[in-house]
Length: 439
Image 1 (spheres, rainbow, N blue to C red):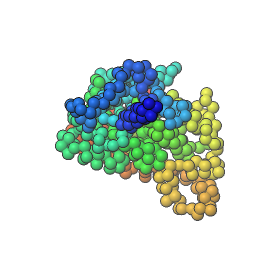
Image 2 (cartoon, rainbow, N blue to C red):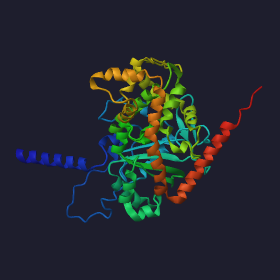
Image 3 (cartoon, helix red, strand yellow):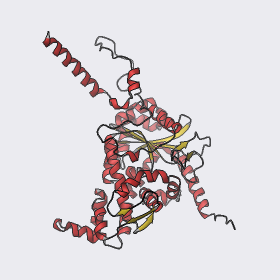
Image 4 (cartoon, rainbow, N blue to C red):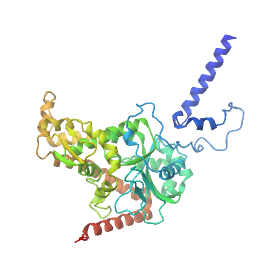
């Protein structure tokens, strides 16, 4: 009798573990009230007929609740600076769009002028100066900015196979003909992103990129291409969170601060710091040279997203040695002695350190401290840091621009480029028009 009870408990435990292994979501993604509303589990019926929908095209997974759930693999407060607030209407819109994708998504975020307001991009978003909460309204103007998303997935071919079946209109004709293997192969080309652009969903126009979770975390840690890491230097709204990305993103944000501090003097303002950080991903980007991007974009972002930048970076900056930044001021001081700057230099991302060593020459291991102090004392260090970042960004950004023609097709590429040129022209006119004098 006792043996039978043990076997029964063991069988139920094994069944529970198998179910957990096969599930695509952790139990932490559902609130207690949601769990109460779930139907009771059914006993498996091995003799029943297979379901009409195959395992390749599963039913939509449950959406995340409206509030952020703690990540059990990390301390409860770790990386809370990444959880930037938006209004309930904006959050509902973003989450409803992501929830429409049946394909499994590990990590998802929204970014850009459609989510957080940028100067010169109309009134699609407004930021409260008191609460810092940003609200996005459904755009009526067809020239309003798109909502930009990035999805990190585990298996890109599996994602594109399901997504192509559910949303065939998101892909060009040749992509649908050649299939998900072709799409994932093009995606794998540096910087490892596939974009579907000018997609109408929920009454708005969106653009979403797809990358792998491994590629995303590697770029956040090492700055292999700075294509993804650079985008994540700026304010973004996390929609689906992941402990591994939360950790590597915190490293990425700290690396951005260190790189920016190496290019700044002893005394500077928070606006200067934010502009240096926001400009990292645009340094070397060919779109900034061609009439395909607003050349005042960095300033536009910082002017309208100052509260979000401060929430992202203030605690990270004051935690670094030799930096003084009182919370109630906009002025920052840092120690620019070679000894202090060498501490930032040696903790830069691996790929940037590699480029710096190529510029200055390799060092002997027993002289490592003196080597970094010598480099930190170079008067041309800020210029060298910017030059090596430009080298990292240039080729991946160029490759992705060319890949956009393949992924979007000629028609969408022309429409997208026309919109970019129009924004560039308006930005150029605004910067060249002198402001009226009140006197």
